[in-house]
Structure formats: structure tokens, C-alpha cells
Length: 110
Image 1 (cartoon, helix red, strand yellow):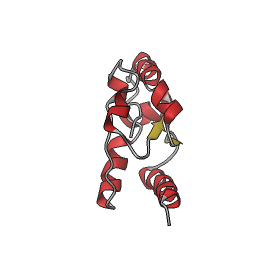
Image 2 (cartoon, rainbow, N blue to C red):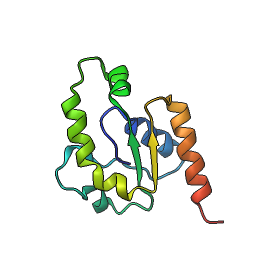
Image 3 (cartoon, rainbow, N blue to C red):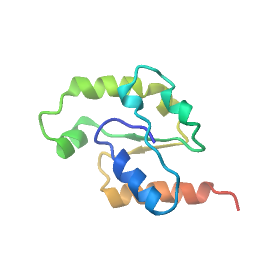
């Protein structure tokens, strides 16, 4: 799982773990190593996105836009490699979890 701060990574990982998935967060948004996420050797890479309005709704109006820009740039390679990209800006946690669960269930071999 990768994504900028306040995109829902921790919430999603906790929900997936509760359902038996081996979900983990990569701190890619905090690293200048473009492929840090790949060191975890994920079977499926999920990237979450959120715009400034979503971040400020979740974290407060003073959240700096420059930080979001830095994090978004650091996530470029991960987003390009993602199996699933979810914009969480307008999703509540339950809806975000449902989107990802549908993808994971549909992706599993029979």
C-alpha cells in the first residue's frame, strides 16, 4: 500500500488485515528512493490518492500544499506500477475498503 499522508493507508491496511490479508504500508511518500515500495515484494500494489481538499478535510486547513506535492512526486513510480489506483478524496472509509475488497476478490485465482 502506498499513498500520501491522509489518503487512508492505515485505515485500509487495518481493515484488510482484519479480513486475513497480509497488507502492509510502504513509507514511499517519505523516501527519495523511487522504488522503495518494491523492496517489500508485493503481490499486489495498491496506490491511494487524495487531493488537497481531502487532506485538509481530514488533517486540518493548515496542512501544507508543498508537502502534498513532494509526496505526490515521490509516489510517481509506485503509482505507475500500481495494480489498483484508488482516489480516496470523496470516499468514506467503508466505501474505500469496499472498492479494494472487490478488486482483491476479483483478482484471486479460482
